[in-house]
Length: 322
Image 1 (cartoon, helix red, strand yellow):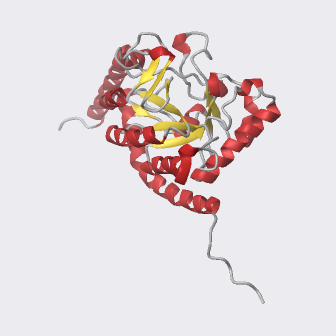
Image 2 (image 1 turned 90 degrees about the vertical axis):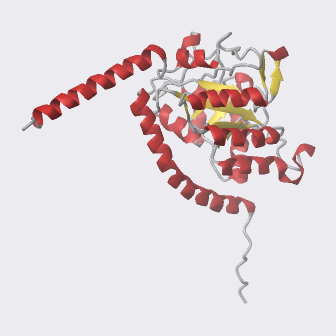
């Protein structure tokens, strides 16, 4: 006698189905997002370089305050970006941009945060701020110690549950910060690949998505990184030392070096200046590392005026007054 089919569904399959449902919603919501991106390209021009910033949530204090953040400063920075019509790229947009398949507005930025099992409180605080300001973060997850059987901090599914809520908010996309948070440059290709694929699988199992971007622990880039392309990864973030000069710490369209994408540091509490590049405000960083401000913006506006004049002259020639 044949058994009746089971009506149960395991967690991995449930998240796959949920991911498809969310994906259909994302397709719908991407239509106005695409329209807004094209509007900003028309207004400010296309990006030929985009800076990436490295946060650790909205509340941290490292290196005796040389790298620090608190919620009021975080909200101030997000509001400043919003008021300046800065476009914060999603993970999918970054992937398409570095592959040369998508234009971003000249006023663009990539906001990243290295996350883990202590991030659930910051994700909860960050979400409404990002929703209010229209900003978007790429959360790169250190996946070890994220489950109840691995950490007392994650009882009752609180850790992965917080990331699913962040995913549902629409203002976060996700990548990997490795499984073990070791210096992967010191590992063999075989050992490093095991680490990264374990992290990838856990993100797939817990969020129902396949991560394409990485941030390297300790900003240490392994020589074997390109083999990750065979496993679905497309690029990875390093630090500020991955380019020859500070001015070159930007990410390019059709990026020639996708496995050591540079990241700058956001302005700190109090001084509201960055530690990388030293002493620069957010406004100064936008002018230094994007094309949408200062002389570049003025030049784009002049070009728009020239094009408008040409169109008007053509129209008058083809439609003379009667």
